[in-house]
Image (cartoon, rainbow, N blue to C red):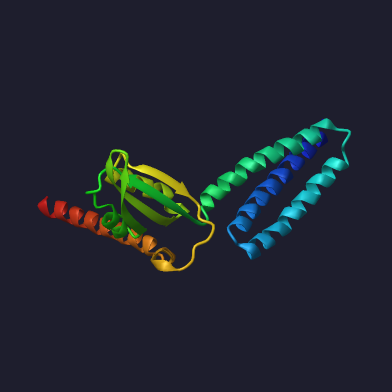
Length: 204
């Protein structure tokens, strides 16, 4: 009897974890404008919802099932957010203000494949360099590292644009230049490592 009760609790918990995880991903897809994919995912979401709710309603007199449903819901939210972080859908816009207008921010970022617009600005303590950068979310952390490498004291604000249309930014980013830059850098490093290995072998 106890074994059956534990199995039921585990099933309700897992079903609700799946339901909420899928629901979270579907909501994110909807917000990102991936309507057809979101509609497809919603089919599995509703199946999980009906199954989980049916199991709980059929056993409302057993408190452990309701508790499993609630804990599964909370766990599903956490897992869903982790999945969203891994998917990293969409783009972000990063605004950077540097206190050193002489730094060649624009060129160094464009060399790495980012879409960049820069202009001179003026702050309380003098001239500033303002830079606006568009990048896919999956490159967000790498972009911050690049910015800190150029100017560790740079002021950074980032946000997700709701709509992107036209301009050099879209062409630059959507053509995958960042990915090609990354692959080229990896190939260059590999070739350099191979050259160093061959040189060391020759010396020996």
